[in-house]
Image (cartoon, rainbow, N blue to C red; front, side, top):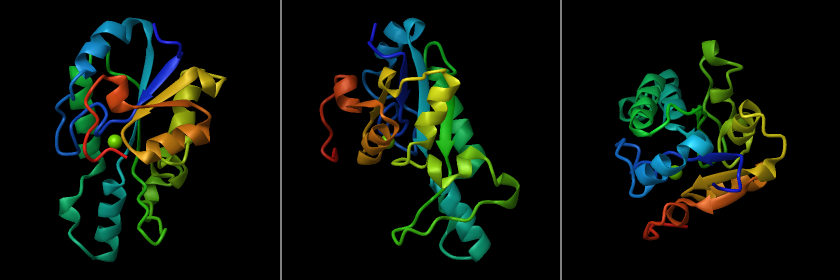
Length: 180
Ligand SMILES: [Mg+2]
């Protein structure tokens, strides 16, 4: 048993190798096998490539085909979930993209108001974590642990008032070279 009522996992670099793959990272299958029956679990993943692709399509720049569609992201999330014992788990994705100048991608007209397209959901903002806690009926954020591999995961946890642990520590992996 962990001391947390809810554990929210980042996806890429935390549960799976990278954005191109749905291969589970070392330690993930073992942890889920051992803990899923006693632990509430959710997933929260930034997938700004979707917003960037849409931006490129409507304003005709770059190579949008390099970036995923919303459907492609959900099918990859499904492929990951299919490998996780006890799944599928509640999964939140954020498609909003912010460029280096701080400008946000436009939202498709038929997606306005959807939490997936809100800038508030993009980690380091806490929106996705708050949504996962609401869905799990967690009133005290200190009862929630965020596990991730990037600084924005850590900052989102801080902003939401959750505990945080690095993915490699949580799953007992060697710290990667590119780790923050
Ligand atoms: Mg990650």
